[in-house]
Image (cartoon, rainbow, N blue to C red):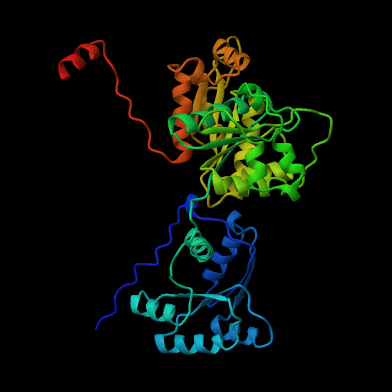
Length: 416
């Protein structure tokens, strides 16, 4: 009987669905330099940050020799282009030295469902058919540890300004509000500008506690503490406000927010990070490791330069993720010479995700009232821009808006 083609296991390469790897050790034994290069690239992805990866050449023979005198890691990746009978012999030889709990992934070129079933029956964790991409490999690894994950991980959206005063906090807050209201999704805004954050003011909240308690008391950090620190703005929107005081310095380690984000991602569909205009180890880490990064800029030279610098850095750090989104904010200020949106986009070599026009009265009134733009004027054009941006960064379909004519009310009567 002819062998069936191996269609599964089809691991989704979509980045949003891939959970980060836990703290494991992985050793690969490759026969080709192409697979060695691919695994090396995968090891540098943000989802593999906790994994310790070592790439070796020599295939299954090298693996057997290596583990004769040393314990096996959590995961072994074996590349073999041998025939079925030879492959089974190689795996039997390896099994003699495998410790209990070690997972084995076999990589080969035989697209055969019968072979796949036989390998699984012999205790192999997965069989990957070459060629495949970096994200497909990471997805395969992730599925070994998150196969029974009950709920999808929350999506982290980081918002940062290319310079101070460009309105990144305003955009972050309105974006989160739009996700919560327009998409009816639970959302948390985390204000990471600990000394000068405005989230509490912008949402007209005065939370007694805030994000600082979670950051400076890591030994107490759990889901119950985070729930107590959240300030509820609506049924779907909550904030983690900054203390907004300068009675202490906020020199934070690179992983300062890791524990907090892990808890939020497990309980909340969308987390919007309002990042201050600083360049530290922790701010770079959050921008690089977010599911979506938004850079807010103004149409001026310094902002353009900084936006281009941030884009170049983040593109290099996020090779397997969507490119950062650029939002041009405060366009059209009276009497101010500006770089046109088209010239700005050309200079930074990226399309603009949104262009927000300057409106001193609308934005000033909203800020002073502690309201979002759509709360103050739901029909405002900028409210629609925020709603469309919310759909863009969450992957929701765009709203199709019909053009209404003067006869629309009359036509509606006849249709009714």
